[in-house]
Length: 301
Image (cartoon, rainbow, N blue to C red):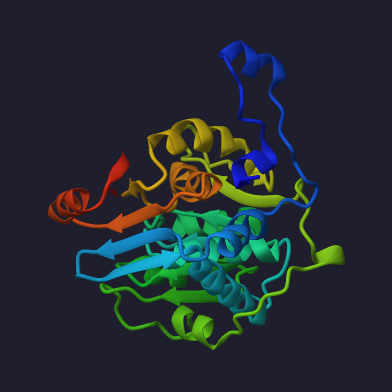
């Protein structure tokens, strides 16, 4: 049985058949990190999970085995900082590949990830930290993000950890921050799935987003661990039909919910590769010619 059919029936003969007989298997302890990412690492360890490149000529190709390896190390790193099940962790990581390591690691721990755009300023960070009792911020070293986090920190009493993710454009790591790369690399590659009270259940909170705040302050929108299962139908009837050896291209900021569902959840659910690119327009055109993309999501920030 392939990964898709493990959770949902897919042999529908018509829309009416689908509408009248839709069924989904939703295990009580379903966790995307273990039951999708780690499962693919076990069954197809050498399959490409992500291709990543930037404007500076840097390129990384990660297999599903790599994703398990780095997410397990990141989970152990986070745990060493006291991050535990139920903690709220905000990720301001643009399109850095460390975003994927962090997200899967937080799912494995049972901590709640809060993806956020790098456009947040001091007041936005203060509001989010105090509204959600955020304990940790994992942030890009690009631009003014660390400066905004530091200026907000004195007004965020629950904030304990500030983790710095280096990139080609990063400046020096500010005082009081923890280096992501060195912490992750020093951590053990063996992360054991929690049991008992520390284990996750499908109804536990997995993700939280803040709305744009168009008509007032941003509202918190939560998703539990069943959220990835909701995208299996899209994975089966959209991406798999596009061709199992093709790639999806993404230029969205990781703070947007569409980035999460279309470029992180759907491709693994369909056992396909995903591709995250941080490129200028010229670099983007060159990469499209080099790789067999089927989906192009261009939200330039």
